[in-house]
Length: 350
Picture 1 (cartoon, one colour):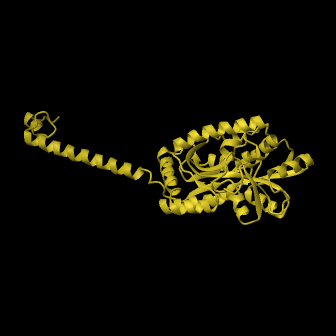
Picture 2 (cartoon, rainbow, N blue to C red):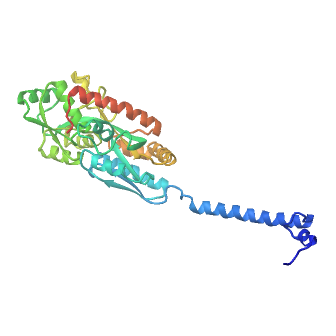
Picture 3 (cartoon, rainbow, N blue to C red):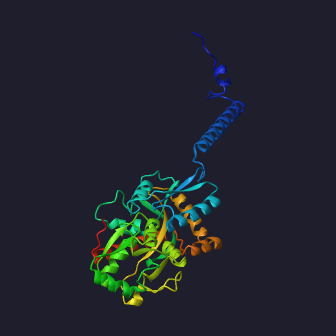
């Protein structure tokens, strides 16, 4: 067996007896190795990091048919988001089930900020009180992004209707005892609730005719298939301005700034009716907070743009805008109030 001398061990750079020059050489090798490892780790982390949001098209689901007021609002918001975010923003109309079908699609979507829901208090404050459970939990399946608009709920009739005011409608409804029909933009919607609350407060009986959205309901009102409609200001006031319908009342205690010429329902003595319509943007639960905050800031800035404010008012809606936190607080109160109305009026939503 070969034997090594003490001199051989002392001259090896890794030995205990290495001299100063050898130790410096070893430290230089170790330093270069550590630096290379750190750089490799840094580049590996960068390569694996998520790309900045957004990096692909965004879809906004509108759970109502194309052509209604919600559709117009959705497309205004989508166009401005697209301009600000630099990615295509597509509106997808998924109507049916009083907005349940479209809402379910978003509730089950990947929570990555690329599938959003723009909907109303029908979805978030009324549907939770339906007797049949919805396939999602409105309070837990979504995260509020920002309120977008508000608009009054309006009682309208055909322009050729014999009803010139609310007392005339009430008198005829009482005389016909359930033979008169009223339409809404869907079973369980704010339009439906307004109609049932109107019946309760006026002590009348009318048959509810639900439609799959405002657009088909308006068409039948104009065509004379239904005599009365409770609809959002976004759609109803457009028809009133065009002379195709007559506004009898806004379903709130005060006149609306959007329709000063239409009386409030309180002016006819019905002080306990107060229902307005709002629309807001939502994301699936679990969407990263940074993405939710980013979208909320964009929407709040969008609804303050003078051009957008003008467009909104031209379609009879008022801009809103709110932080996710403020919107969540508003939702809790609105949902509770809507439940109180439904229970008091004994409204069946299914």
